[in-house]
Image 1: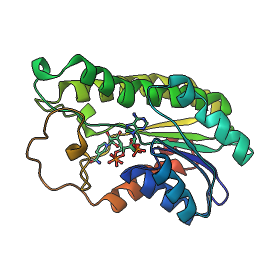
Image 2: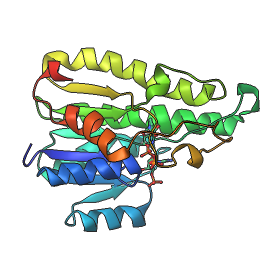
Image 3: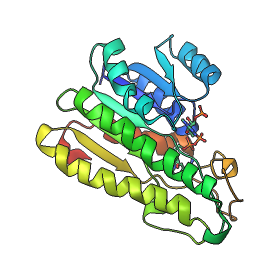
Length: 221
Ligand SMILES: NC(=O)c1ccc[n+]([C@@H]2O[C@H](COP(=O)([O-])OP(=O)(O)OC[C@H]3O[C@@H](n4cnc5c(N)ncnc54)[C@H](OP(=O)(O)O)[C@@H]3O)[C@@H](O)[C@H]2O)c1
């Protein structure tokens, strides 16, 4: 994995930030993308001034343009991590349309656009690792819109994964368990239910993101 040219989308977040740091520690050449320009610049500085680009999930063309940009600045692209998302809570009838649209845009349409742009940009045997969440398999009451957005993304990734197999591009859907780190407290709508303590973030990112990111075979993930 030394020198693996890797784009991390959501590098300003907890999971994306950890993934970027760990990938850099393993010798990857990084390009970073995130929404918060200041935090992005800071993360880039900490990782040896790697190239970075700010974007917003609502700009779907901008999302699709991230991987081609990374491929240009890194002179090729071997791997992409997508770790953007927002939580949202509340019974379905209490979630406003704007919040519902926000969840679907940030959690499903934007990651899909990033991956759509990445597929032609990736080298053969490349990998796309996208964080969905355990919510795809266990959908709690009071989180219908969040669960629906993540499940839509997971369904889309499942088809894309099969489409890309022959090309040798690995498409990995990471159904991340609940982590410590306050993700649910940053919800765009509603309040999270009481939750048991989450998993330790660094260990989880190492296992669920870094492991499949640099696995060598299509069957490894
Ligand atoms: N943490 C958990 O327990 C957990 C468990 C399962 C799945 N996940 C999933 O993992 C992903 C990352 O979670 P995290 O814990 O790292 O959360 P986080 O620290 O809150 O990071 C969220 C990331 O999403 C980006 N983002 C949010 N709204 C955006 C927008 N409108 N446009 C562009 N980027 C936007 C943030 O960008 P800025 O910071 O630059 O605004 C940040 O990079 C999410 O998809 C989440 O659903 C998390």
